Each structure stands twice: as C-alpha cells, then as structure tokens.
Length: 96
Image (cartoon, rainbow, N blue to C red; front, side):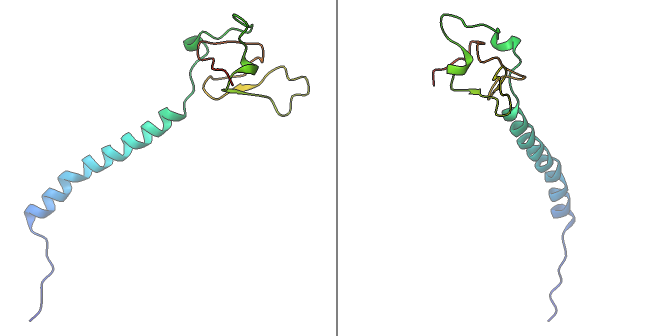
C-alpha cells in the first residue's frame, strides 16, 4: 500500500499564519542584541572633560585606555559613545 504525503489545507494555512510570528520574533531578537551593543550618548550620562569630586574616567571600571595614543590624551568607554578623556567624569562612574 502506497502512503500519500500530503498537507491538508488547514495545516498549510496554520503554518502560513505562524510565519509572520516567527519572523517577528527573530527581528525582535536581532533588535534586542543591537540595542544591547549601543552605547549611551555623552549627554545622557552627563559626561564632562574634568574630574568631579575626585572621580575621573581613568579610575573607572568602564574606561578603556588608548593603546596607540602615546600621550594618553583620549580613550574610550564600554558604555559611553565617542572619545573619552582620562580626566573626564560621568554619572555612570564606577570604581575599578
């Protein structure tokens, strides 16, 4: 006896209805991952180029020292966009 492989109309419609949900879920995952990699704007964390209350970026756990800057005048930050002064400060400061 030959077995027929067929999909009923109801099964096909059910699978088609699920496709947009799956695509939406994947898009949400990708958007969430991208958002997790975004850094805050300097204005959002009230960044300034000078120390505040003795706290400065080069003593912060998030500061990234410049590797190829012999004068070490600018670095980066794990959570703030742009170049960062080692003598700067923001409200996200956390002791190393």
